[in-house]
Image 1 (tube, one colour):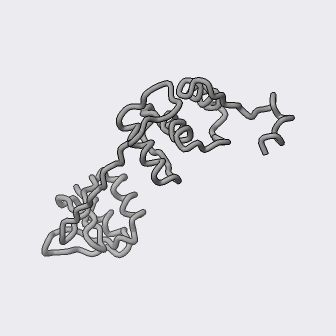
Image 2 (image 1 turned 180 degrees about the vertical axis):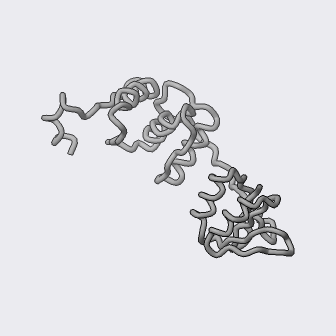
Image 3 (image 1 turned 180 degrees about the horizontal axis):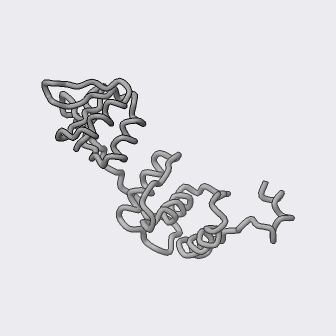
Length: 173
């Protein structure tokens, strides 16, 4: 019981079971392919095929294409100089992320949780001298950002804009 994308069609393959045949017949645009003994459904009907797959426990296969496509991922840049004013040394992958951020400027760090996205962002800001800097984050993370800022930079201080400093907001504007 497998569904794969083959060009403009989804190929639905399974051993004959009358209830599955009746279910496939309800899919829009379906047609039986007697040579390969599978059902073909136009790729534009993805939502219906996904519902069908979920309901009947089908597995999704890879994309079948006529030719193999090889993608080349360029190597990550290396940090060429020492990061100024950092108390802690970043891991190698973090240093590569910092170098990438400095090279491309407008980036999003999409690492998994716990890998040091905050540290990479702080190190990038410090290395680029991008001050003043405003970090927009959920309220629950404000204190974490302030703590991380102090941990990584040491002497530089982060100010949290909340109700206690509301009267000074125009100063930062």
